[in-house]
Image (cartoon, rainbow, N blue to C red; front, side, top):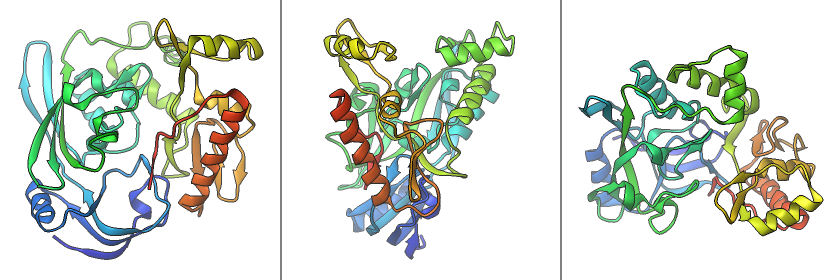
Length: 335
């Protein structure tokens, strides 16, 4: 295991923030991870770097989870159980599943990051979430170095949420994730308006899982910046869920406010719409800015610091609260 000192993390976070780690080790085996943790439990864990904003240098031992491998654990007539190591690129893993005609993850195509971080925030897109196909995950407890298996129930999944963002935050390193996917009669989810209209444009009436993936990739490319071209972390804010009464009151002043019914008493409102109404869409403050096509995405045009982007986020939070009396939550981990 090679220890690198004063390592730039610019290439290890999708915002492209040029922060530095005092010590850096790339982890390629669970055994190595346990050896390191037996000597040092004060560590900073780095996965795909797609869901974080670095506002400072990391003066801890930084562990880059680079565990690789995909294996089929078992198959039934209709399903396959696939275990992926945490360091696998998420989008490449989804494409591998599609190539093998394993269905369930196609709506989650082109989401940046690694497999190991996907359950932490229960990543989701276009009507599908990780929890829909999740079976279990394996993790190492940082304090003791002991392995532990987490079942679906133990993960306490919620909207962009899990136990790993709450009481177990910073206590475990996920090493692998197992999914249950379909081998036939795939349950396709294309009721989301943008997917349906794109399928119609392509004159596809009986879509395959590859068709759904292709359309999702097309939509995401048209709306969201490529992190390799413009630094970003995808959606920076969660879509707020408010009471039906609060929504109806808002609707009086904003008749065209978009919404999604969550329950009989709760309504989800797109955070991007709220931010756009406040005039932030496309605004640039030095090298920090709000994307021109999607107000939910904050971007680093070149050399913005994490602090500059965080300050912009705080200004957005304040303005949305003052304008709509809605408190947005930041989805990205600010470090």
